[in-house]
Each structure stands twice: as C-alpha cells, then as structure tokens.
Amino acid sequence: MENSYPNLVADTVIENSFSIACLDKEILGSQQICRVNYHRIFLITEGKGNIQIDNTLYPISGDELFLLAKGQIYKFDESTVLSGYEVKFGDYFWEKTPASANNCKAALFNNAVANQYVSLTDTDRAELETLLKVLHTEFKKEDYINKPDVLAAYLKVITIKIANLNNLLTKGQDNHENRLYREFLELVSKNYQTTHEVGDYAALLGITARKLTTLCTKCSGIGAKGIINGQLIAEAKRSLQFSASPVKEIAFQLNFTTPYHFSHFFKKHTNTSPFQYRSDFARIGM
Image 1 (spheres, rainbow, N blue to C red):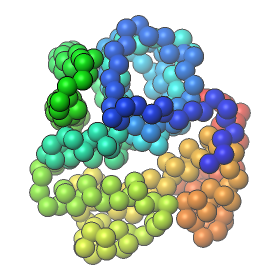
Image 2 (image 1 turned 30 degrees about the vertical axis):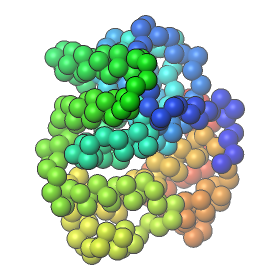
Image 3 (image 1 turned 45 degrees about the horizontal axis):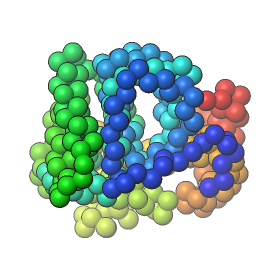
C-alpha cells in the first residue's frame, strides 16, 4: 500500500521472530511512526510522555502495560522517556510455546484494542519486572540447543500472568467453546479482506452462524458480526490515516463492493465519513 507519510516505517526483521530489550530512561521522542509486524508488550516501570496507538493517545506515567498486535501503528511523543522492557514476538516464535497458552495470546492480542492498556499495582509490576528480567537475561546468553524453547516457556508464563491481571481468563477455561472462539478470532485476523460474512466463518468452523454469534457473545460480550466489523474499522482507520490510497482503493482492498458501501459502513460505525476522518487527521497530524 502506498504511504503518504515518509516517516511511517515497518518493523525491522528480527531473528527467530523474538526479541526483548531493557529500557533504562530511554528517550524515544525521535522514533518514527511504526507499523507493527510483531506483537508488542511494553512494561513501563517509570516514564513520562505519551504513546499514540492507532488513533488513541495514552499518557505514560509508569506501572503500566501497553499491548500491541500485528498491524497496529504507534509512535511515542517527542521527549517521551521510558524505563522497563519491550518484548516483540511473531507467530513463528509463538508456535514454540505450549498449546495451553493459546487462550492467553488470543485474549491479549486478537482483540488488542480492547486490552491495549493495563494499569498495574506495585506488586503486579514487581512480579512482571522480575519475570521479564529473567527472560532478558536468558535472551542475552550465547545461543544453545533449545534456547528458543526456553524463551518461549518464559513468554508463556508472562502472557498468562498478564491475562490474569486483566481478568481476561475468567471465562478462559480451555473448553470446546473457547477453542472455537479463539479459532474464529484467528480466522478474522487473516481473512477480513476476503469475507465479512458470519456464515462464511461459521462454515470454516463447522458450526451454524447462530451458534457462532451466541458463542462470541458468551466469550466476549460482542457478537460475531461486531468482531468482524471492529477489525474492518480498525484497518480502515489505519489506511485512511497512514496511506495515500484513495478511498475507492481502500474500499476494494477491504472487499467492499462499492466505495459508497464502504463510506456508508464507515460513517455508520464512526459517525464521520472516510474523507472527513482523513481530513481531520491531516490537520491534527500524529
């Protein structure tokens, strides 16, 4: 997709699709706008400034987590200072984690917008900081047989802890319904540009559309159509804000039959037209 913002960059490729960095009063204000190709966990132990994730601005004060999923866009404001840890991991690395952690990853990153920010108590922050320090120490060691598996095991523990902190696993028993729900979220993240129909996803899962809607509402409080629409709106906003693609092209990229259909859909869910949304951000900037 053509980019009208020359300072928008994609993630650089990282070996084995995993890295962790320790931040010690890091000044990040000069950082470019980044489109995330790897999931992110930011543990902020101390800090000041702001981070903008997609179109939402979050103040930074410390004792907090920020979770970003693939495809999202973020930038720190000028003169933002951070201490803590930054973890990046891709699906290739996640496949090394035990299967029992899959519900945590789905809860945290397949619906990242709902779980973008997590405030921490002193105890929670200290516990996560200890775990991340161990992970960072292991990551910095010389390579050895099964090192990625060891790192993945630590990441599993950390994601479980984070999910529990945010009460995301209260319905997270690994039963058949939760497995189907996680599979649905994965399918939406991969196929939203191909189909918007609940029935299509239900067919891929081997259940009825009504069953899928009931299942999603039970697991997340949002129906299947709402989850699909949320994915479409999130990607439409990124494209309007960070690309020079005409609205017509964005409409077709997201598999809308006509630009009018896309504009009507966008306005229904955001109370503004795609043109007005893009114009507003062009005036405000990021």
